[in-house]
Amino acid sequence: MGGVILRNVKCKYCGKIITNDTAFCFKDNKEKSNYYCDEKEYIHSINQKNNRDEIYNTMNELLGYEFLTPMWKKSMNGFLDMYDFKVLKETILQNRDSIKYGLEKNFDNEFFKLRYIEAIIKNNIEKIKKDFKDIDIRKTKIENEIFASNDIYGTEAVCDLTKKKSNILEFLNRSDLD
Image (tube, rainbow, N blue to C red; front, top):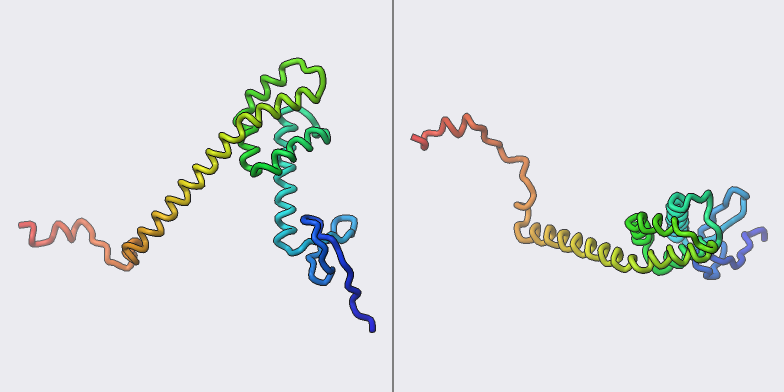
C-alpha cells in the first residue's frame, strides 16, 4: 500500500492529542519534530517564549545576574500565568528603584530576596493592570467616536482632495469685496 502512516501526536503547546496529518509540524535545530494544533498556536507559543525571555532578561539586568535560577523563573512564570506580559514588564520597570533599594538590604539567602521582590510586584501589579485597562477603554472609546463621526457625516468626514483649492489671489480679486 505504501501510504502515510497516521499516528497520534501531542500538541506541544496545549497538550491536545491530534493526528500527524492534521497537525502543524515544526522541526527544531536537532531535526526533532514538534507538533502544534495549527500554525497560529505555534506562533502564539513562540511569542510567549520571547515574552518570557524578555522578562528574564529584564530581571537579569536588574539583579545583575548572568542568568536566572529556576526558582526565579518559576516565580516570574507564576506572574505571567496570571497577568499579561506587558503588565508584568511595566510593573518591573516602574518599580525598578524600589527593587534596587531592596537589593541593597542584606538578605540571609536568595529565597528571602525573591520573596521581597515578589511582594513589590504583587503590591503594584494591579494598579498597572488597571492603568492598561483604562488606556484600552479610552482607545476603544476614541475609535468608536471616530467610527460614529464617519457614520454621521458619511463621506464628508473624509477630506475631499478633488475639490479645487482656492488661493488668496482669487479671494482678493472677487468683486463682492467692493
